[in-house]
Length: 213
Image (cartoon, rainbow, N blue to C red):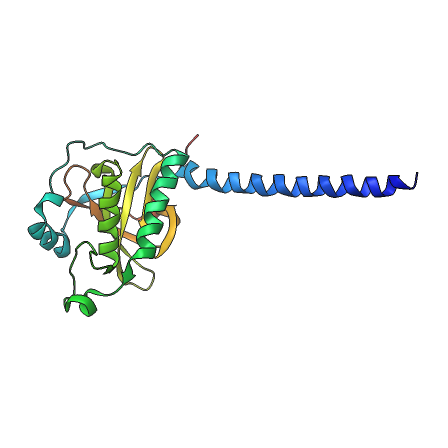
């Protein structure tokens, strides 16, 4: 009889620990699942101007600017694929030191791979695009994108086209987010058919979100 309270307390503690562990595991699974189960695709408008930085980049690196073989390329976004994309995004974000083009090159706008370990937002996006292509992802699903931040400043990110909608890789955030889960105003991005053609992006208020089962 004297041992029953102690035994009850022992099992009660074990059950409580097990319950907390299951709750934590469930939360982790929920977060991982939520990261890829809802998205939308951006509505594209008319053909628009090509950023000067891209034109200049292509003159120096024409092999990076060729038309794509597959217009409808998209990434099959499984949890494993998302983890691979997230690793590349985080790796580039943490290994490149941010610096403005003016401070580094004395120029207002200069796009290139950050081979010296320093660069601005376009350079981050270019390196992520290159790393993802090297990892086997289709170039037609990796689109350089121009946005406006809430303060009105221009910014560049990389959009990835997937079977679950459009996601973005951003040097200001290590999380791979649905494009419409950011607070940016989207301006334009590359065409899937030809990286040298850029198209306008319609305002997000006109986009209907859809759930992916």
